[in-house]
Image 1 (cartoon, rainbow over the protein chains, first blue to last red):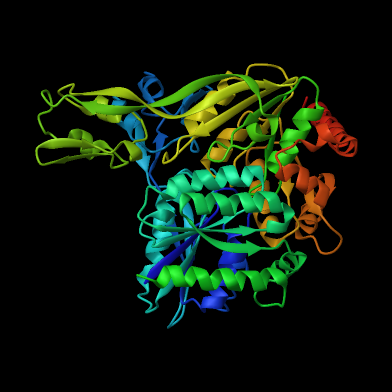
Image 2 (image 1 turned 90 degrees about the horizontal axis):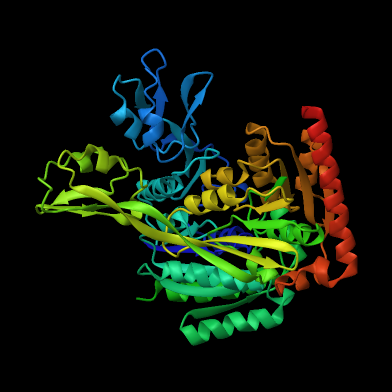
Length: 289
Length: 284
């Protein structure tokens, strides 16, 4: 199974819009949403069946039993995450700041500080006999998004669906969820936006992807909002040796389609037509050896 | 006064709003906490930049002292240490810098060294102080950079904090010291879904907030519906506007180059200031 990951660096360039169109065009049997921080793909991939839910436990969190606490302050002094506070003469843990490292438990002389398992999100698995869709939602303020991304990808493979390709929608940025989503995929399609911000972010996500053994290709979305910048992106790709797969126009129909729960290839529109061309080129690269 | 600008979904216009508000507010400060993809500096083009490298602590082992007891590797919750082939191996990339391995080592074989993960740049652009955090490529988390940016901000200046997308730990860190939150939303079901998430985040932290509906057009607007349903204050409507889009895509600050947009953002700033002061009255 060849895995295609869709990334962008900058948010809002159209990752999910293009991922959902690709899923449709490929009639994909295996796909996943790795944007566990702000997942949206489930809003547009129509599943009649309810997903199978499972709790995701990230790292443990600390708690302090104030009956055992002798207020020696060792935990607070050794916590690197400023997660231990004194309120009304009681030691308490800031659950959002705690990273579950266990240092407080180790330094506590009275066993007042202990670790306990803490739910950090939820996984959802939609499946039937021949297809699978894996997604998840991280709980607010949680820090272990990379681990959850890895779980989403594992879950997608757990059903052993026989298919040639898998399509994975990624998250914005270049940090831990993006790094986790990159491991093990065959190809990254970067959806760039023709703004100075978009170009800067594209260069940073390409540099991130270069640390992995993946094919890298770029397309420009909303190209006609700044044609000069769009040309710059194509030139950049040609100069640096990345595959440039084409231009997708800005299209109000795209917004309309998404708001009606459709993909842009479900309706007849310019952005959908251009996406079909990009899709063909993407498949040629993904499936070549 | 700290005003955080956040959105849940990426690309709704956080940087557009933060940059333009900071530009129309006199003598203000702009802090870019989107350290993975910082863009504010592209607009402000600050000068007189003072750069400071940001480092975290990672362990180093003195092999002459290590007796192979594996206590550090057993302790590390992040699997950043392993003992294999009679040698302690340290995986810098997954280390959370908790310092636990140093504490548990009975032979005092582990110490720490600095590892640079990014930098903070402090400059000025006109009368706006412009601070940006920039995470190095390949690093997992920019939280120490955000902490540094916000800890250093002791001024009473009107400060605009441009947050990363999402609602994870990195966003929470960015809004921790905010007096007011501005949520920027776009008129799509994706936008509305992610608006709901940041709405829950700011509610959980008890932050006063309002919404700016960006790229506003006639017709169905799921984000607007959401605001009405939840009785959320709508601070402003910024219409979908090709000219504004074009100025912004070239990394120019619309409110500085064009009187029309100067008025638009001055009005939004005014509304926000009124909201903030009425919140202050209600809570005093």
